[in-house]
Length: 447
Image (cartoon, rainbow, N blue to C red; front, side, top):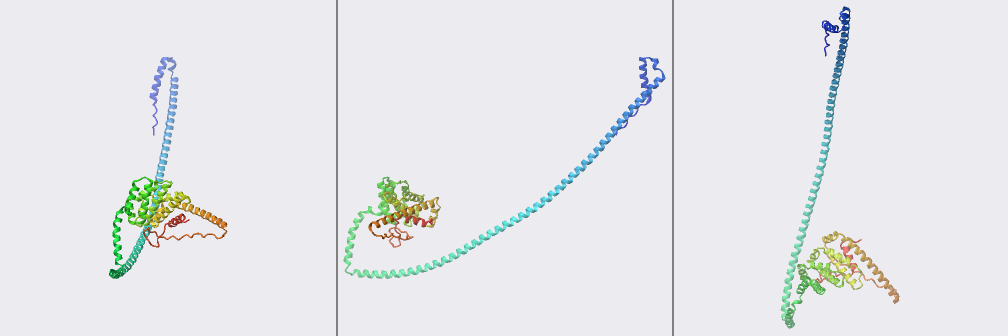
């Protein structure tokens, strides 16, 4: 608080007015101003002016003090309001933090519940999977034990039969030896002994001549043909070599095994791929396909034919190229190649694993189906032409009886080489439609 200023005492003011008046009197008429009345008036006027000035100063000071008091009151009210506002903000912040902690605790409890449920589900699924695996393993073990018991029973039965059969064979061989000894003893005293001696002498005379023609044996012809096939590039030499190899593979299993050991199958497939559609090339392809067919009929060499890289693709390419109708010389050779390639594929896909691999080759099934549809359509057209020709011949001859259509023989699902001489052996197929039908049935691609 500001203190009001103190008033100036009259003695000092009078002295100051007196000094002023003296100075004014010295400059003017000293006589006019030296009167007491005038001096009294001047002093009263100066006192009144001083009072007015003092009152104005006191009012200004009072107003200033009132303004300062109002300002301090407003400042105190603002400070109190700001303090209340900050307290409210702190309370609100604490309340929001409490609410946030409460919501977070609620969310955490929900998350924990979801995690517990999810882990229980995972544990349950893991338990069920392990239980199923254990059941599968137990079932497999039981099946294996059962299979082993059955196999042991079968082996025991087979061993008993084998021992009984061997006992009977030994008894039979002993009887046969006794009979042979008796027949030998009998024949030694028989009248035909002289004829046997003469035949033995004639065979001894023929034996040197046979040894002189050692080069005509199948083994030597096979070696010569292989050298020609691997070394020469002339068509005549290659055809002669393939003919020798065809004879050797058709008549001798030893020659087939020797041919496979020399890796001639790769050379034969390479030779087939390098040929074009000319007549000499088609003769080479026909002989090469026949060699592969002879090798595939032998169970010890069929894998060597199949394991050549791109062997199945090469045979499918032959089917695709030589599928035209047989008739003229070139088409007849093409039909022969087509039939042999089909027959070779049929022999190769007799094994289920090989058949699955052939079916899984890209576009192999579609190619075989398209070739089968095309061959079937052409055969139907040929049958219709044949029937029309038969009807025309019947009408010209005056007989209305149609010729009997030859019945197709049922295919026997057993293949054997030419040196096996039993009645259940399957003959080579010469009908293109029968060959492609057999291939489609073997691959289960019937539409």
